Length: 116
Length: 107
Image 1 (tube, each protein chain N blue to C red):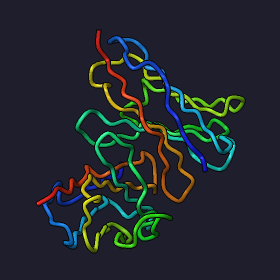
Image 2 (image 1 turned 120 degrees about the vertical axis):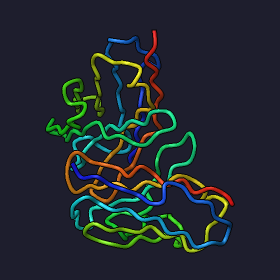
Image 3 (image 1 turned 180 degrees about the horizontal axis):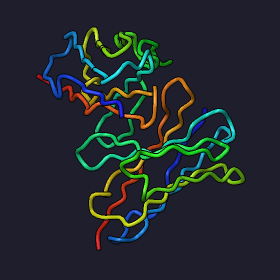
Image 4 (image 1 turned 30 degrees about the vertical axis):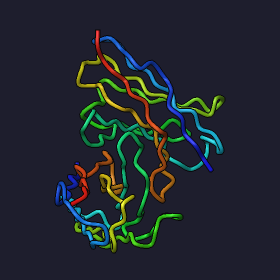
């Protein structure tokens, strides 16, 4: 059973870069899946950030595209998220999720706060 | 972008009640519709995929129906552990989009 685990700093300064990693266990990141990032501001709904497949093909939410980069590291069986020029509006729980074509399976999420 | 609109945004119900949540897409998405349950402080959990297929391990009181633009999640007999927020999600095209959520509260 594939499991996902997010990791990264819980506090980022305004105008800085948010960097998170999602470690994949119990399966290969090179399998036929799309690997996603989603965020949820406190008390609000879910916002899709973007996705990547094992070959490095990416799709991004147009609302965030100019600030976001998603990459994959097959040697470490993980994928990563970078968000540049963060503001308080980027404060959220960030989730990674696997799309295997039969619904999504999620990591537990990690809270990132943007504050000085 | 495909907009997903859920209704109602919240509802109050009693244990044993039949509960129905609707999700409408701004354009046809075939059966590319998933439903998730989210409890406070937890990640979303997959209930239904492809509009009507029950995820393994999910109780049979949950069911999904619909295709095209109109979809429904039904809980046939609400249990105490079902009080949560429910989200629909389209996987037809990017950007992937979610409904705004339906919070099911205890009456």
